[in-house]
Image (cartoon, rainbow, N blue to C red; front, side, top):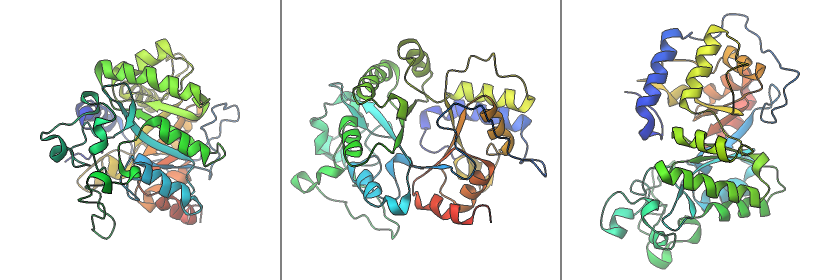
Length: 340
């Protein structure tokens, strides 16, 4: 079956993208393919070869419960080990207009939501921030030893860093405890009118903190790109699914992308286990050809979700600008193997 990690609502669109890619795909670069550096690139997210950024996916989902303050704390306090450059995480908007961190459509899978509220499908848009404080976001976190260290915590026993947290709090924590060295990839998961409301608030939060130039925003919902481009052109974003498809079609045809009305600064695209049938990756979009073509048009290429050292090595050696991993130490291990 297809492994489309974490984007259930967009599976159909992504399968259409895969079909198009497979129709014209190559299994990899031709022998002797070289990295072509765009000496005139101005995009700050394009990295020099061998200097690929490391991103903590969902704030480090294999290290601590995803998208929690605990995850950010563990990565930040141990960053000599993880060497993270970019924090990637997901946000939704609550009933009272707060931006909170959550990857899934609801809290059901990651917390005690069904028990706490007596029903399923507990979504931020239906509750206030305060009402959501009863949740233990570590309830279903399984560590690498197969244990559930935070299961069963209720009431006052739930630590603050495992409760629902706002975007404001996360950014303030990171900025206070660092020297502005981190960038952010922030994906809006709210849909419909909630997506546009989240976009409005996200812009306010980033502008208040002077972080517009250090954050790439994203969403799988098509309305986001249209709304953001119209209302907040100074807020950076990645390509949406349709734009990725158009990019790849142009890339495979080696057509001129100059007149394609590019309004994104980066491609966020899957690789390895993130897009596979069974054990086989069905399309390779981590090639030098793809990365060279993007760089030619001043577009950064950032990959998700890479939890294999070998996959990370290939991307590093091919010139990827950033690699997102649930465990950033996988990428630091890959750097030790790359270019040998």
